[in-house]
Image (cartoon, rainbow, N blue to C red; front, side):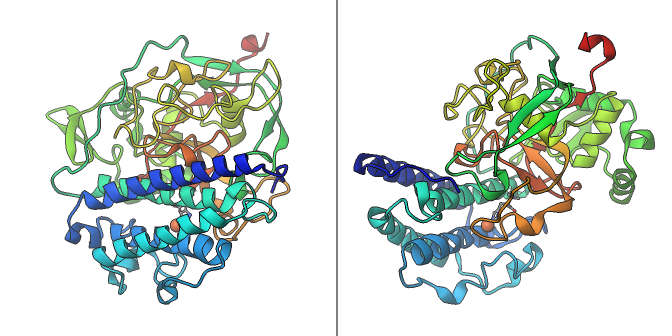
Length: 445
Ligand code: AVJ
Ligand code: FE
């Protein structure tokens, strides 16, 4: 952890107000996502990949109780008897509906009771002196945790059958891109962070990485681009697929992204229960790593490595510094990126020119998580903090890293350094991709 200089009383108050704001924002979202459906919908399992929504809700409260009521606050437990039910490592998602879970009313009462205590803990906590509370880290971690589950609950909504219950204004329209690709020259950059106060353990520490020159797409691969791959027979040609990717394609029989159907020759996709003609200029979403890698191979390109993605997103060639975000160090605003479930779809390519990186790469933050070619490994000098089960137990070649956040990700849980991961076969998350490639000799001049 970093050490911040002693905070003045005024800085402590500003930090407390910020914590209260992000906790409240997370809770409004959890409430909206769970109030949108009836008790039967809350307790049923909409997909074997997902928990019942009522499990996510009480799990959010239980993590908050463990870290903020008991650990930071040193207070008595609220419901120690339910710790085991809401421990994600004790019961697989598929088994959760059969557990004696809190019902919807109990779960709501529980999270409210925990939150009341937490706001009281926040009033009295000293936000420095101990790594867990330094810069209000534990509060930021819990706000991020709730928002991560809010994105998971949004993915459950996307899987849910039945009449639509969520509504939001359409994302902004796209604009013409100044270029299709950008060359990122060779050179070192600083990957990860040692200073971002609420960065999670796997984003730390900051370290220098040497990156060869590469070319990266200005925008993510769109639905129209992806449909061209399908029309070209991409799903039937093993040349484009890795060995495990082709085996997965054969085993599952997939022929298009999740939620796509072809009706009388035209593609439609379902967004939160609403069938729509395929939005051609929106980034493709609900594709697996294997599908992303196959598309890239067909296009004569490849997925970026995690280091390439982060260099494209953060490196400022003018100063040599790594920025917090592509547009600078400023927190994300609605002009920069499609984050925070303000819209329930990714925005078209070119919709956020104000969010471009110094070299002109667009929409790296928000819209869709972007698959990278990298396995999920710790950075040199990694130390688990504050618990092994956030990152440590997931490191290894089973998971691929995704970057940048989606329209379903809140700003508190999205940074230029933020690392997400999932199995390469998963499609229920809001994941798309952009392509990269090695430069041609003449491009290096
Ligand atoms: C970082 C999104 C992979 O949802 O499994 C939530 C976040 N960790 N509760 C997940 C998380 C513990 C995690 N991901
Ligand atoms: Fe969790």
